[in-house]
Length: 384
Ligand code: 13P
Ligand code: SF4
Image (tube, rainbow, N blue to C red):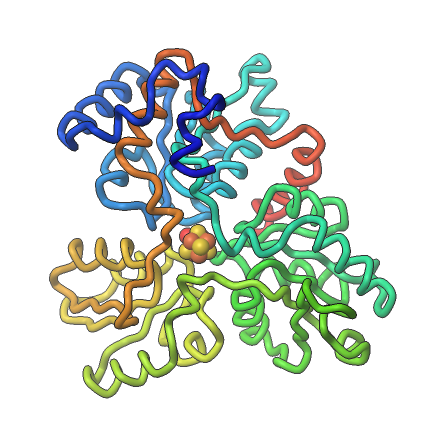
């Protein structure tokens, strides 16, 4: 959905018009957002991912990486509405976890409403694997290998339907902070892993576990046969990687690492594991956004860093840690355009409609998909 459609019938029920919010001054938006937060008290929880813009982060109750945000949604007790400043798959996950059967029961059946302030805030990587493609791949690979012994693992950056696929087929969800533990869990239950949608997180994690590149064929959903692989390659595989990637992290290159090492002796390279292997292999530290933040926080003054992850997080770390020397690993701007869609006008619009009884942009996973995606998510929460 784009801005133009924000004003169509989809919002005919809304009391407040988004177009008006886009004309408001920042000070007024801040005052109105703060007023809703005060009026709604602990019935409202605003969650934010680390890639959000500073002016949005300022209004969040809690901030975290994907795993931490899942935990926060799962343990929310007092709140009756979560406004999620992040992207679509995160809001879906929050809806699933905040409305688990036991939580619903303890609230007398009352659902926690989850709201994504802008429906266009998606994740291009998550969009690289559609459920029909994954099901077709599963069927095709079943002609060559025994899928009973394949454990499907989906990165949390995926639609709920893919999580449900994993739940149904004995599989699990992982995040960037628990990918290795999840792969170990999977190998205790099967001979191979089918990992989607991010080939880089899958590859970088499996390499750390001693699995070789040759044992990791890449499944191209657009190839005509066997995902573009020889049958033998699938038979010899340990991890079958989906041909998906993050367009933001793909922009970090090994030559950027070489340049920093040459120009700043002693500098440390800190990256997110969604970066390609050639970059990840050269890094001193690789991990989730939460780990990136902790690593900087725990380092002594004067430490020099070149960080390869989304620009807003790196800029925030720079501002919060003037005692360290922090650089952005790429010479070009690598920012997540969809995370950036959440801004003060959308946040204020979503909050005031929620307060006034005309909620917009509710994310609710269908009943059919909920059951099995929760199974896969619960397995993940139990592993970490
Ligand atoms: P984290 O789980 O590390 O926060 O990553 C989420 C994400 O989308 C990174 O691109
Ligand atoms: Fe998706 Fe990449 Fe944006 Fe993360 S940074 S939300 S993986 S597009």
